[in-house]
Image (cartoon, rainbow, N blue to C red; front, side, top):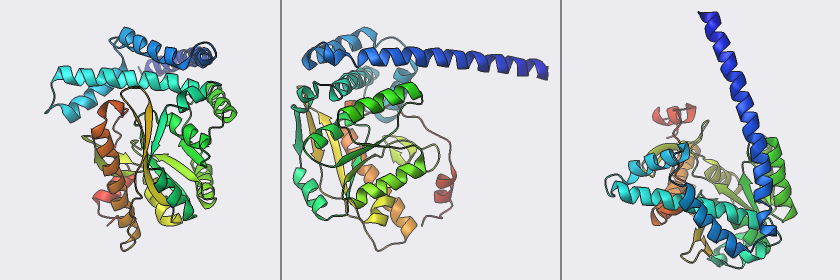
Length: 326
């Protein structure tokens, strides 16, 4: 029985690897074709097509749609009807699809068609923070089309670096890296972690801007907080970096406007208290930053990426429960 079970597992694993390879092979071709679209049609046409596309395919069942509906029901279930929740989920899909099209134009010769419609509010906060000379930590989230925020600020002359994770497939990752480098998008790869942390600190010491997306649920590490109805482990990176380097934390989000233009909103700096123990200070500052993110999500619920999953408790969450971060 055991040998038979092991044989089935190996067969299943082999089939899974083959299917995965085929999926990535097709994905690489599809990505290249998709990113060629800006060479063919104007940006306004692409946005119109993205809306038609969502109307065509949204009702097709899928794991991401189910996960988004589950999370929306968890947070809005007591205040909104199921029809209203479904409408939000559909708008979330619309935002994500338009955002993907916009990313293709942000790394193309037509990028100015996109950037010309982006307004920046609160730029004085960024200028003042850079004058301090200790670097700027831009606190952001999977809200709005955050992938194009850095390109706009770089085009305005700001030393902006987005910390990001690329797809696991090497072919797709290399293609995206080449595109971003070709069109002057500055980025720091999140993996490998040690190299990423070193480059982040070097960038802050050069008085540059480092944007951290701080609303993800961490599989390994993180501070447990309640975000939009779920307990997740958010990354403590922004708080740790601010404590260690003295860099200014500026909440920075990009919000889609009703006419499909965008506005980058830069809030005043977050106060970092220094009169408490180090670990306790990290926890409290992380909670404060998460509340800022949650406030923006509540204002623009259709612009947040609702497909996030819970992970099991890890050593950081256990430490908090045991009172070791007090």
